[in-house]
Image (tube, rainbow, N blue to C red; front, top):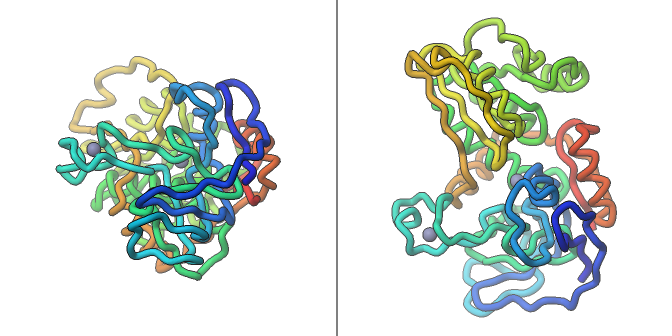
Length: 328
Ligand SMILES: [Zn+2]
Ligand SMILES: [Zn+2]
């Protein structure tokens, strides 16, 4: 197999040839058809997240077909198309796993971070954490659903059913998917971009946003909730300022720059500030069954697997709308 592998933080990924791996008990081997590029991959490469201490193949938005089954795998078949997300394994024994909050597991493995991911021609996955995807839609369009879609979905649920107007800060891969879901649910979406980023504001409006503007602008009226996808701490006080009394601000990213101090007035009147961490398998089941009904169309920019470093650089610089996807 071939892969783009990270040997140390702050270094480019390297094209490597590795021996084909055989899935262990309870595992599957997936022939990768497409793998999305997520901002978390940038945080791994840039050292914003602690380096796992060994070379790692990034990528946790994997779409592919099972080409080998490990011992004891049930409910999946050779040739079946599956998606492999960020949550790659949980312990099943800690208090969080017992409480149905496996996203907070004390001993998890994360695909493309603490276990090898999908910037490769093949990947090994724990069968229990792979989602059957059916045959509708092509691999490239589906890949961004596996993290941008899923984490966006968990964040939207966290925003609350009663949030009829929702601000999305950082209009990239996650926001462009979840805006479509929110609008399909009958909510109004307000897209916030980097100040002056007209093309992305146009993109948000083209997806049905009721309003789009810079993150330094107030929305036309106070919002019920806001979700922050951009890794920028200064957006926290900005989003608190944009929500009404009792409104909620959800931080959806795994990493964010420091949050500047802000007057208590912004939190006062029962505004809430919460974060979303990882996903549960139930999130995946719920979202992947809803996605076709909501008619989600992902906007993707395709890169050859070997061009993963270019895809990461383009994501860092905001050079495309929607999501980048690697194709082996
Ligand atoms: Zn656990
Ligand atoms: Zn991700």
